Image 1 (spheres, one colour):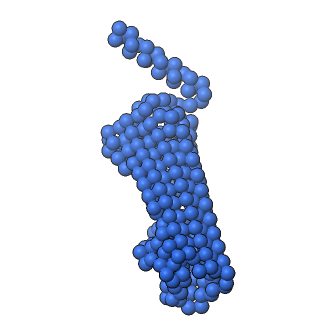
Image 2 (spheres, helix red, strand yellow):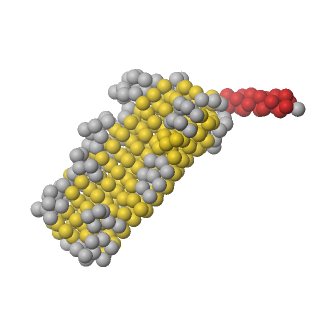
Image 3 (tube, rainbow, N blue to C red):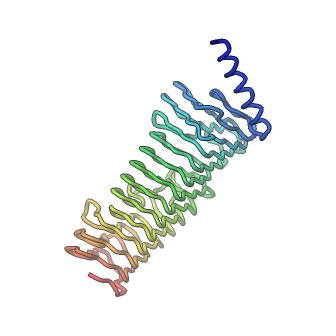
Amino acid sequence: MRTHRIATIVLAFLALGTAFAAEGKIPILAPIVITTSGSYVLAKDLTVASGSAITIKGNPTVVLDLAGHVIVSTAGPAITIDRNGTQTCASLTMRNGNIASAGIGVTTTGFPSCNLDVRIEGVRFRNADVYVEDGNLFVSSSRFVASDLTVDANFTGVTAQIYDNAFTSGGISVLGGTSVEVRHNTIWGGAIVAQASDGWDVVNNLIEGNAITYGGIEICPQGSEHAQGLVVARNVVWGAILVRNASGFRLSENTTKGCTEGGAAIDVVASARGLIEGNHTDACAYGLKIDADSVSNVYRGNIFKDSTLPVLDGGSSNVDAGGNVY
């Protein structure tokens, strides 16, 4: 009977492989190093105790369907993209499955002068951070539990689009990057952070329509980097918004209930030429706090509710353009 069961299982996997082959997909049944372009499908749950379950090496174009299965990595990254010194980078599209690990779900290695392309759709990460360096990143309709998503952009051409994801005890970090969009995500117990990386500033980033509970939005929190052309709009934040070292920025129509350590719902530090309009803050010592190093900012049409001092403006040439409700 045992021999019969083994034979049945083998025949089932052979039939499965034939079906995937008919669809033009290459089945994955064990840890693998992918060096050839193609469409791959995870044919079973996969657990690894060392190394990565899937390594993409060199510069292949890979489409990976997890097919509802789970990859569990107990000692290392579940998926590693190893650029291996190539001048043409890999491309990965991954969708439809689950990744759980000892802390790293997807990571990149190697330092060639090229941009990766990584697209993730409908994947659930548990204790499995995603870290993409020097890559164009698109992430949508995915779930992160105790996991963070980080795009580290060291080229001026690198972009990211992060849409419609849910984070529980995790958040989003954008390090450098040009024309990055973080939109319509739900975050509980985490933050959206944008700051420079290796000398590359935050340029033309859009943070819009996100719902954040017990977290906040932090722009250049370290104080040694700069943001240019930033837009933070229509977010609902149970926390605070901090903008530091920004120029030519816009904060509009955000709703906040929570404060920074300095007691401000919106805290503007060492920033210039910003427009702060249509925001609604609630129950903080300061609705808007502008420090002494901030100049030429304009605030108008905001509602500052239940604040001891609605606006604390310690800078110079900042303008109250009217319409604020205290």
